[in-house]
Amino acid sequence: TESKYRRHGENLKTRGTELGSAVTGSSLTTVLPASSSVKKSIVLSSESRKEVAKQAKVTKEERRAQIDGRHRYLISRLADGIDLSEQQVEEIIISDDKFQLIEQFFAPRGLKKLLFFYQDVLQQKLNASLRPDGSTNNLPQKKLFITMGSTEDFTGTCAFFLRTSDEVITASNVSQEVNFGMFDCNNGNILQGLEFFLSQIMIPALKSQQNWGDVKEGLKNSQIQEFLYAVDKFVSILSSSRQNIEDKIQLTKVDIDIYVRNLQNPSDYITAG
Image (cartoon, rainbow, N blue to C red; front, side, top):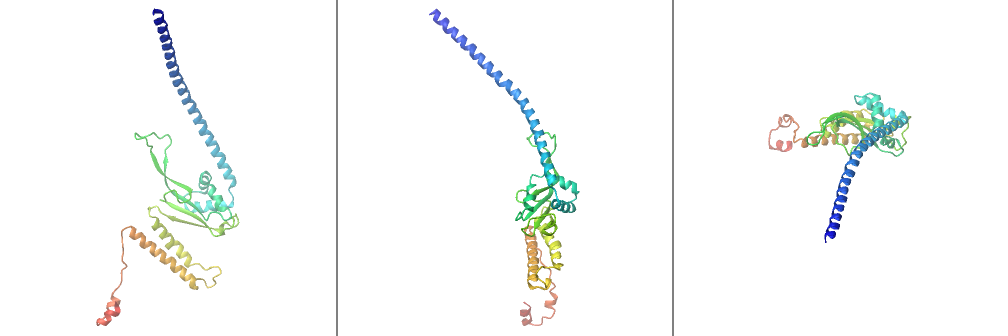
């Protein structure tokens, strides 16, 4: 019995030693690699950032090499319309993730429109510390960027290019095949910006248009007159809709004197009515 307990005790002691070694070993195995992996992760993260920055620089230079007369036309129009230099616009364009949309716009039967938004965008400050709630201190900053117009809210200025045909856009025909325009939404009211663009820019331009292509009569043509009337009516409806949305209805002032001045009897009232 004594030897039996001795053997049992030795087994327990041996198992206890193995267990302690296992626990101690696993503990060291868990802690040491974790510490080294963090350092390794930091090194890899730093190397990854350098690699990403290097690749981004290569991509920018490749895009810069693609810049030709077509791109220069877009850049000059944007620089004229927005308070930026052509060099700034070029850097912005070749750094944009959606640069390929420009090439799709130039292609035969390509995109019908190319949009740029210039507005305040939240930019995270470099080396910004986290707030107690885990958020960072983001500041609004003006930014020009390419957009499809369906993913970002429009709160600033929209610069747009529209194709007039399905022909391939070349350096020689870009000024004839591509129209440029802008409208403003800095007050947050898109309808008001569109109304101003149509009423103050497009309609006056259309009414002063001398060349209407195959329509030789120009503004005297009945179809042209109907078209201009339809545009005027659309702007009027747009204005009414905007005012209704703003919970404001403004009745047109009417001079009723011309209607009541010569009323003499009930039949005149009925006629006037």
